[in-house]
Structure formats: structure tokens, C-alpha cells
Length: 399
Image (cartoon, rainbow, N blue to C red; front, top):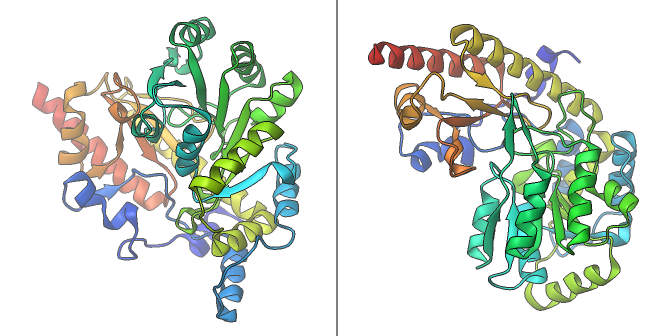
């Protein structure tokens, strides 16, 4: 399928459909007629097989209590086998309504108030919120920008664990927003440090299928198995890959028996949520038949990325666009072309764009923005036209 064919079949006008991304944008950003490139939500319909499976379920007209559909795990594992070869076991699996909810639940289950929880900013901002709202102690081991990429300072990472008596580390893999797909040797070193200091690791792998560069994704599950590291939990969801966030389904994978029993006991006491049948049916269909859809989606995202790179760097050679190895979220450094304190004025007030701002991901992130590329080239081009004109206007203003 060509890009044009994918767009003709799957591109959707989301405005006026009760879309958070489109219909709440002005209220959320306190703007007017903003073009949304913010929250990680696509402007594309899910794979056709998902639509057909849901239509078949709805046609039955019954929506009572349900169990996971037969063959769900087999469909998931077959998907893994076809893509990254990660080996899971069905007994490791619990379901939840979303990765962020899972993080909150796991923090409650495996840590106590005031325990040190470690993250690596700039990072997905609900990590900060989950830690603060559960009354845990937020500990940061910032990623280090080396050239045009972000790297891990392993010595500093270990020193912080020791100094702050860290209980749990939340790993973002692939990393949102900096777009890194961690190499196996990097994951090995991280997990080895956590193993040495008995730190529990939660690996958020929600973006694992959205790989754009040459770096292959390796799951923390695979690395932990090779290390013999037991204190690992992996959370993921079909929501980002197939645009199913509204169906409220995610996975919690706990290989260690003792930890799994502890989580199950906690859920029996504090979490009596039933499984979302619509989400399960949609996810199973996507895992069974979504391969070509995903391949074509990645072509669209790669083309959008190239368009953004070419036009922004041609207009402003000093602008820095970080390599996008994974996710559909491009991390852009505007600090060489706009005074960082003027970023919101230029991007939102002048260009009329709604983006995620760098300071949401890191306390020193002002002047960076995150752009959502999972939309049509037409929308990307409109955003580029607005952004380029706004930055040029700012340059004239400075002169």
C-alpha cells in the first residue's frame, strides 16, 4: 500500500467527534482555533480488522460481563514473534485500563509513601504526576544531551540510587519525548545497576512497535531474562500502536511469581475493575491482522518527519531536531532561534499551534517542544507554514 492509499483509507477528520486532541484543545491551552499537534493520539482510523471485529461484537447486542476472548494471548505472542521476538508467558499477564493507571497501581502496590521513585527526564510528564499524587518522593537522573542525542550517565544513575535510597525506577522504552530506542547494552547496564541495589523496575514499553530508525527494539523482559533480574514489571498497551486509547485496555506483565502474587492480592483489595470487552476484541484483531496497517502508518510518519526536518532546517539552519528512532513524537529544540521564554508566545499565540512544551517533561526544558507527527501531511504542512512564518516574524521583531 502506498502512502496515498493509506491516507485515502484511514485518514479521518477528528474535529467535532468528541476528540480530546481536537475538541478540547482551545480549552486546554486557553487559545482560539489552535491546530493540535500535542497529545499522542493519531488522526487515523484503526486497522480495518479492528472495525470489523467491533462491528461483529456490537451486532450481537449484548454487553454483559465478559472474559478475554479465546486466543488473546496467542494473538499477542504471535505478534511479538513476527516483530521483536520477545517471549512472554500468559501467566504473567494482568489487564488494566491504561499504562498511567497501571503505574499508579504498581506504585501503591510495591512502594510506600515517601519511598524514592526514580525517573529520567526529560520524560513523559504523567510519570511526575503519578509519583507526586501517590505521595512518593520524586528522584531524577536526567538524561545527558551529547551532540544531537540523549545518553544515560550510568555512574550518576547509580550514585543517585545509592544516595537517595531509590526503591523503584520507571523506565521509558522507547523514550518519550527524546525518541531514543535504547540499545540492549544500555538496558543491560541499567538493569544490572538496579539488580545490584535491589531496585524494582517498571518498564513502560507502550511505544515499542513505533520504531522508525535502524535501531532495533529490545524489551526489558529479554534483557532481564538474560541477567536473571527478577524485580521487573513491563507495562504496555495496543493504544498507541493502533490508536485505541479510548477503549481503555493495557497489559501488566509480571514474570516473578512472588511479585505477581503480591500484585494480584493488592488488586483483590483495591481494584475490582472488570476487563473492557471492546478493548480486548479490538486488540486481538489488531494483533492478528494489523501488520500491514502498521507498516504503512510508519511510512506516513517517516514522510512527515522528513518534511518537518527539511523545511525547518532549510528555513532555520540553527534549529535542532533530535533523531527520531522511535515513537511518532518529534523533539525539537528552538533555543537557537527563539528566546526560550518566548516559545509559547511564538508557537501558540502567533503560529496558532498546540504542542507539548519542553518544561512539561523537564524543569530545564523551556525552549523545546514535542510535535505529534501521527497526522496527515496536509496538517503537517499547515503547521510548518504557520511555524516558519511565526519564527520569521519573531526574528524581525528582534531586529
